[in-house]
Length: 141
Image 1 (cartoon, one colour):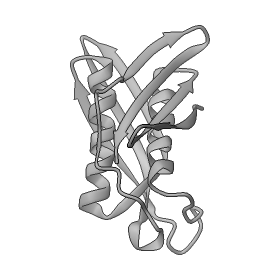
Image 2 (cartoon, one colour):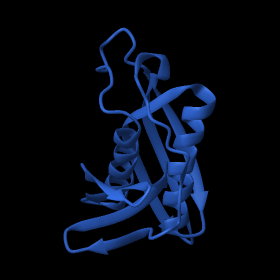
Image 3 (cartoon, helix red, strand yellow):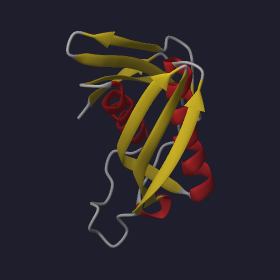
């Protein structure tokens, strides 16, 4: 399981996240993205709690995989009109990096959401540390 912290960043918002493994760290950054867009959302068992959905991205390195994963979540928000919450990710790297992930898509009609325009490479940091992984990602708001 990963953890995240929202950080103020000039006119943008940043997420610091940690996890026991790279997948937990990716999921924690995605949960931070959800928190940057919305303060609160319905529980899974609520009538408007949303349903789980899957996604997959493949990239040439771990930073690109993280960027593409988060960009795909923003795309899901825009196209499916859902807030991706309760994120889970499994990440594998062997030549190319793949992210197999799922999220619970809460209908945007059930929440008051702020717009996050895009994930950025600006200041992105992803690294292995003692005890796991940590990431820092800036989002354009």
